[in-house]
Image (cartoon, rainbow, N blue to C red):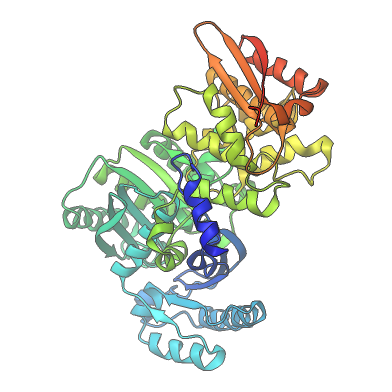
Length: 521
């Protein structure tokens, strides 16, 4: 049976996306992966559902312990923070045991590696919880953070900048590989302890950043990926300042001019008011002004061509570390959508048939657009359990806000709108209008065509591996031809006819239906 399945897989045309890997033994071994990150500012447990390549967060909890507070002055871990960290890790160990995922991978970064009582803290954690805490150096921290970026952007290139409580790391990415890495003491908790006032602080940040630039071979003009809670907080404030409608931080883009405007906005506004409006914790917000100074100098020295926020960092990098190479190289968007179809669709596998069915409508689609079409056809039926009156809304919200890697923000909206058209002929309105403004007219029309084609194709189910027919689109003559196999003829009823007419209308085309007779045997 296993050999037959392999032969069947090899006979299938996967459309350039490769065979799904989530059911392979190596991928299924990542079904539940626990990671404990003991940072200078926070202690966090993440349990990944990793088999889908773009992992879901099965469990995610953090405690703001500020282990690194006062470290420069005392040389010790913050005593109160240490108590809180031990308590938090004791809880996390119990949770991991309850989930059946022990032992979990646990790492500690700058505060524990620099503190004179760091080894004693490691021993206390081992004694109290049974968890072996690995203390990693700055370059290893940079490598893992860069691997986290690769989890979301396979094949990425540019500069990764990870800011923690006590340190800041830089890593070079080229052709999907981590290159040169450097570390520094530019974390906000450390900067709090710089003496001499604002002038001395700015001078210290400038000299340290110039030294980092020199160590990174004076790189400029690259893409900059920002990793870390302080960067995400600044990005969230930037969204608030701009009135940005999609408050998903991963893949959020900022320009140098926007960063400057947001730095001024933070300086001019009350931090507690900003914290409340943006949903940022008080302890995080107190570090933002210091992080802003670092970011402004980073932008001036490295002069990146664009800036992207990555919600994936060291913890995701630890998951990436455990992935087989073949899974690492896969498109996280496609693998996640295939996994969702397998788990939630009524007819898993039909998404591949639907993709081939509607693909002829987009003869000029580049690879990026084909990815969106593939994702849409995989997700077209995963929300069937929702109430019929709300399926369109549920699919849109899932597409725009789900934890999916490899999607620009406007692509989330494009995908969401296509899925809305899958379930309704009149999408949008109300709270959706501001989000739909992220698309231009051509993109909205493209989403409509994609969605109406899926709406038609969904009426023509035969089986997960049987094609009901073909669509042929003749752009020059504006003619749309639907050719159905004989077995699909009974499926072309009144509703299917209406949906085909709606698709032709969206294309501004004339429509023709043909029925292909089965050859006599």
